[in-house]
Image (cartoon, rainbow, N blue to C red; front, side):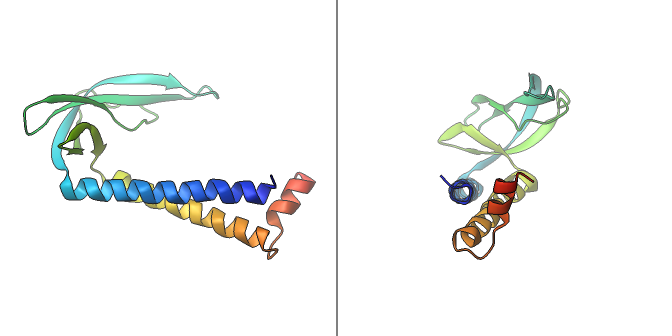
Length: 142
């Protein structure tokens, strides 16, 4: 497979994945319930480069007074225990909760979509012969 075809394929996955995430989050905004979760623990993990990451574990209560435990987004520092986090949850699947922040609900899906579209434009222009950025970089190793 040529590199521009690989970029096109991966960019298409990013684009469709971003739109699927945006659709899911918009549905959650319309039909979801708001709650406040409390951070009760942090799970430490280390990536292949030795960098630590922390995934906060939090609990919240549904409208039906069920206690639900969720994992929040991983960060570079541990979240303060007892920290309150606004969330949205699906009343039919309360374990599928999302942080109700502008970054998580708007920026993240659009960043994925824009990255995918940029890749599609780059790969498409390569495939159509309009540019040779990828081909030159790939062949010369620069």
